[in-house]
Image 1 (tube, rainbow over the protein chains, first blue to last red):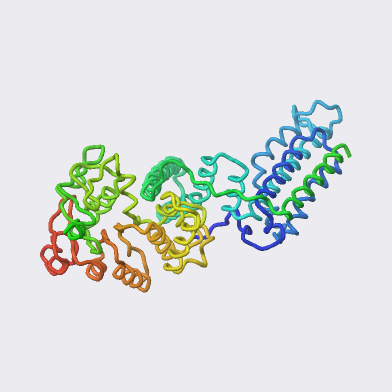
Image 2: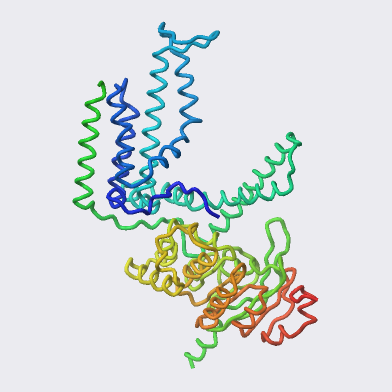
Length: 254
Length: 243
């Protein structure tokens, strides 16, 4: 089955794709932290911050439309938080009021800042995943001393996410072939049964995968690849990224 | 004389083997057979006969009563990890077998766990993937492969282990005719011992010289493959022939 993979462009070729995974991981994390923790960011800071993922999209030859659509994932999370921000300000500068709901310009500004911060952070992560093949990302994390067990969990997540997805689609198809509309209340129970069936199938799959691992000599120990030093080019890029982030930090109040 | 004795020791021997699930259901009872080095044995039987369970038991992944001897040494919970180095198991569903992010990492998993050095691991990966015509796709995640490719990849993981005994569970299921023929030819030419659980009788006839028939967990017949596969009454009784 074909899915819209989370790393659709990861195996393309661009200057960004050719960088060592460690350079991209460190830069992305520093960038996200800077965007997330900077107190009261100014509009120049946010504009420059938001234009960085767009610029990197161009360098990495990833369609901007792809980034924009993928980043909509923040709406259910950051969207609701932003809404509550927008209506919770105690400022007297009221733009609109309906009963107890008061929309102030300060609330609007806070909500917008929250949305922008979330969008920039999510965009940076989407870019990271789409410019680095997942296995390289895991190897990069290993070399950055992320615990091996966590890496193994991530690797299983990536491998079995699509298999589970396939299972869900197959079950939905089987249901849809014998569901002709109506009887809404009954469907809730059926959905519950489908979820429990999916859980059981996942459990069986996990058991077989464990067997497959043991059959090939796995004894609980996770073998790590030998680390090698960053190349000069990657170090230069990392250094440039850090300098850019320091520059961005200096712009925080503008 | 000593060399002759070594040659006579079967690659795998099963004596009075039985297995029950934790809920008490009897899955296998009184299983007895042996396979010499280089020999191929078919384990045939209808759906639910216990063929897959038997393979899991032979690999020491499930534990029953009776004896499983690998090259003359009885498998116990103390030595099963060591003895498993002599075995390679190919699961029925390749998605159970392939669990690493890329194909080459998956094939390297077994050899790396054997403690081989990186150079030897990579040499084995290249050899196995080239043999299975997957070397060009070595950096792909398994979910980017077709079913036939996944099946070949699962076999490559076993080949890279260079095991003395290859255990295969329904290796031809869901394969297109050309891939099936290719696999049968490969398994026929394989020089180590093979135990193939299948209800594909053509595969069994093409690859194996010996056969055991199990039905409802019991060993019904064992012997020469042609003797069993030409017994239409026996095959009919155990749902291995239509009509």
